[in-house]
Amino acid sequence: MIGDRQTSTQRARTLPACKEALPVRVPLARRPMGIRETLATARRNVLELVPESATVQPIVSGRVGRRWHMVMDPGALRTILRERPGDYPKSDITRAILQPAIGDSLFIANGAHWRWQRRAAAPAFNARHIAALAPVMSRAAEASAARIAAEIERQGGEAVIDMHEEMVAATFDIIASVTLAGEDGSRTLAPAIVRKAINDYLAAAARVSLLDLLGISSRIPRPGRLFRSGAIRRMHALAEEAIARRRRRGPLPEPDLLDLLIAARDAETGRAMNDIEIRDNLLTFIVAGHETTALALAWSFYLLAFDERVATRAATEARSVLAGRVAGHDDLPRLGFVRQVIEEALRLYPPAAFLTRTAARHDTLLGRPVRAGDAIILPIYALHRHRLLWERPDAFDPDRFAPGRPIVPMSHLPFGDGPRVCIGARFAMTEAVIILATLLDRFHIAGLAGPPPRPVMILTLHPVGGVLLRMRKR
Ligand code: HEM
Image 1 (cartoon, rainbow, N blue to C red):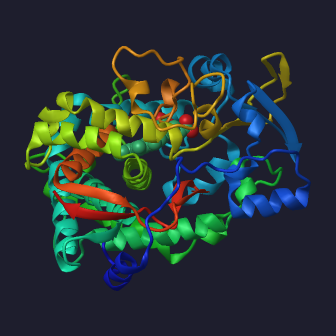
Image 2: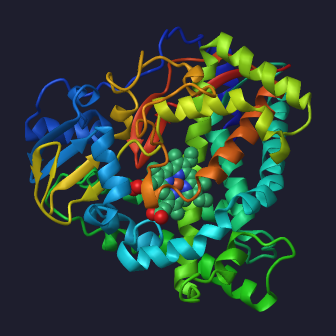
Image 3: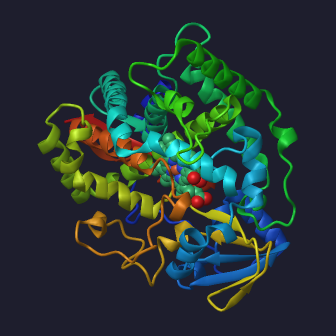
C-alpha cells in the first residue's frame, strides 16, 4: 500500500540500489543450540531454529521439552500428508493458538468435523466458481496499477514503492470483495475495519512464544485470555452482522463466498453450516487467504527486481498477452512464464514455511521410532532448498517449472498436500497471476532500493524491511 507517502518520497531520493547477488537466505542453524540460545533465536526468527542439516538429511530429530522430528523425505511426507493424515492430525499447538480467532473451522478442525466442513466448502473453490470470481481479481489489479501510477506521477516519474504493503492492499481488496461483496451502509464490514482487527490479532498472536508455534515446547499455550481482546470480539461481531444481513436479504445475483457458505450442504448428509461455523470459516478465508497470496507476490517482485533477464522475459510475456489491458481469467493459459515465476517464489520463500502435526500413535518413520504425542515438523522452507531434491537450490530459476520439466514428487509443497491441501490454492494462483501480469505489463521494475528484505517467520514468511522497489511506467 502506498500509505506512507512522505517516507516513500524520501526513500526514493536517498536509498542506494541493492547490490545483493543472490536471493537472501535464512541463516539456518549450523550446530546444536542450548536452551538459552534456542529461545533467543526463536525470538529473532523461529525459522533460524531449523538446522542446516535439514537441507541434506531426510529426517532430523531432537527434544526441546517434547520430542520432535523434522521430516524432509518425500516418501515420509507422502505418508504423513497423503496416506495416513489421520495418524498425523494438525498439531495441538496450532489449534490452541488459532482456535480463539477462527473457532473449530476448516483450517484447524480434525476428524469428522473437518471432513464435513471440507466437503461443504469445496464447491466454493472449484474451477467454475474461481472463474466467476476472476473479474473481482482483475478489478483489484487495475486499482493497484492506478495507485502505483499515481504515486509515480506524484514522485516525478519514478517512485520507491513497498510492494509488500501494496500487495497486501490488493489481495485484501479481493478477499473482502469475494467474502462480503454487496455489504454496504455505515455498518459495513469495511476492509479497513477488518484489516485493523486482523492486524491487532496477528500482533497478539506474535506475542505467543514462537517455540510454542513451532510445536516443540511441551507447554501448551493458553492464548484464549490474550485473544479475548477487543480485536477478536470486533471481528466476530462484524462477521455475524454480515451473515445476519445476508440471510435477511438473500443471496447476491453473483454469489460470493458468503453466499456459497450459507448454501453449502454436505454431499453425504445434507447438513448445512450454522452461523458460528459460517462466521469462523469466513474469517478463516479472510485470514488465510490474503496475507499468504500477498507474500507470494511480494517475494516474486523481490526476485524479479534483481534478475533483469527473468524480469524482462516475464514482462515481455505479459505485454504480448495484455498490451495495456488488465489480465483476466481467459489470459491465464498464455501467462505460463508469469505463473512459473510465482511457483519459483513459492519455492524459495514459501509463505507457510513449516507445517506442524502431532503424532496420534506410535509409528516408525524412516526407521526412526515416533511416539504418540511427538511433534512432527514439516519444514517446507528446508524441503524447497534440499540439496538432494533440487539442483542449485538457492538460485532463482523459474524454468524449473517449465512444462515437461520433471520435479521430484512431494518436493514442492507450498500449499501442503493430501486431503488437507490448501483449499484456496487455485484461487491464490489465479489472483497472483492476474495481479503480477497486469503490473509487469504496465511498470518497469528499476531495481531494489536499499537493503534486501529479511525473510522472518511471523506466522508466515514475511519480507521484513519491506520490498522497496524503484518503479516507473513503461
Ligand atoms: C499463496 C497463497 C497461499 C498459500 C501459500 C497457502 C498455504 C496453505 C497451506 C500450506 C495449507 C495447508 C496447511 C497444513 O497442511 O497444515 C493451507 C490450508 C488452507 N488454506 Fe491456504 N494458502 C494460500 C492461499 C489461500 C487462500 C486464497 C485461501 C482461501 C480463500 C486459503 C484457505 C485455506 C484453508 C481454509 C486451508 C485449510 C484447508 C483444510 O485443512 O482442509 N488459502 N494453505
